[in-house]
Length: 311
Image (cartoon, rainbow, N blue to C red; front, side):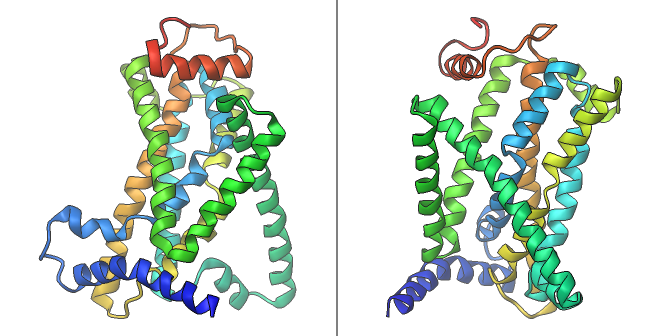
């Protein structure tokens, strides 16, 4: 009985979005462009969380601190690659109605499938460990609570957010998109405060440079922290049953809207990643890192009070 009620609530929650999307796919010229686009936004924003995780912060800040703007081109190339891969992943779910993991299960022998499953579980645990510790550290820095209390808050917050899926895909998409939006707005504010050297930013964004073996290692870290396998599997699962159509023309239009979703979401993630690098690169040279707690508190106070001039 409880399962039936949950399914009813889930259907009601997503029915408006699905109905609006189907109306757009049937008659795309009846509404303005923004109204046509809104029902299709969401899956890429969930996947974009993988592109602004603690690994991205670590590699991008280290790159900016040690090499200034030199490696910003790696972020640009990595995010362009990510857009292509995430678009193909979304296309797989839309066109076949199956996610990447299900295709692997069908295409490979059972021993290979089991081996891949075990490997993916280990990778997921290793990845989640970084996210979990990053969130716990965030609560510690922002609220001043002990790390153990931050870990408990992280666990509770995670289950609450995942529990939104009981009410359909739209509440989960809305909450995660809001979080991504807050991060993006903070970095927009930071860009306005820091005032980076845009000439150097644009130059190093399109002209590749390296400076020794350490810059190559950091570039590899940026690429590895950006193009994430779990986001590829996730995106195909998010699109496989979200809006289901069979007509060839509707499938093409749905795919085109998903491309826009990817470009907007990962474009924002690309801006955030670039700004992670621009911030330390814009500081005085040589850059000497302060203790983590002091740096984060000064950073937050700088954004919300005086800017970076009083550091």
